[in-house]
Image (tube, protein in one colour):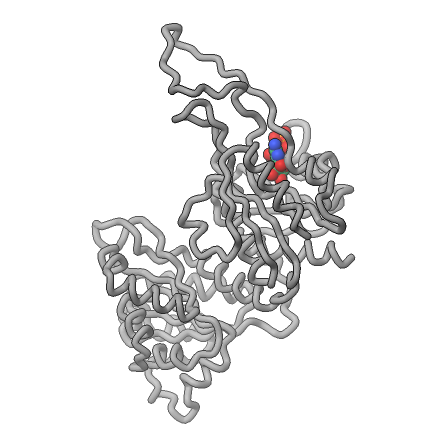
Length: 415
Ligand code: CTP
């Protein structure tokens, strides 16, 4: 993780990591480490069956604290009530179908389920189980009910499971679970810092239609923009998310008002409208620089020549337009610059030049290539102002960086 986190004013976050009896329990070791690296004080509560996967000694060595699985082991201290009241958050990773079912039913048959029942803080579950168990209506119903009660349940990742099977059910990567719980706590910490503000965020990549079945597009997933909108909501803002071709999975559960668009022209119109209501405008979308000069109304057939020339015309620069002609007084406009270095300049130098050229108040320079950027877990950014001066630098997951970007926007608005 970033290593760029400043010590928290109210002391370190206190996090209970619950570990249940799934094969993925070993990954919780990395989760504990990641949370500790970010400065958190971590207590581990395994279920008795989880100790068959990873032993007590490992958890005690990692945390430097005694580890219990039953309420009776530490009855004098009423451990479950103490942990439930002590923690800023409880995260259960992996969360098996069995523990999810017990939680839904309000059962308290071990120290972890008792702690979950006594907890007064946010609870995050990172499920891991075989696909059939995840898709079973009983589990689906339990997850729905827990979500309705305010428990945060991450969607499991898809991929290879313990046996030869593969599908949804894998424990999300420990880095992603750590980022989710830390961003949740950061959001609560900064709760209210965006109260009364409207934040319009664009996300995703535009599709420029060639004919009814073809388009020119790019690889942007929209993750950064979605994370920014989500965290702005957590900090009390009304968030408008203008989403270009962002997957339904990523948009699920987003508290923002979602307006879907396809092309750069659609996005321009939607951002123009959103900016008229917004105090903060963030252009995180990857907008196509060019579109086909003509849209063919019928599907184009292959020609005889073996080659095709497609004429392109330039799209308007939405960010430059929104920066130069502010739709509301006192509005803060934030752009992105995804850059690689080349022979003429480094990624950071290109980003600074773009920040000055576009006229936005802040620009998030995002170094891509070298395994950083599009869809990767760790991303390096520098936030620069309209003169190209750096106001913040960080590296981390997109959820983490979203918080840092919002902090920079808050600081900018009060400077
Ligand atoms: N952007 C925009 N409209 C466009 C192109 C880009 O609003 N037609 C915005 C993006 O949302 C981003 C910023 O401009 O906030 C920079 O995008 P980027 O693709 O890095 O820069 P370009 O202006 O396209 O410059 P170049 O491709 O030449 O580096």
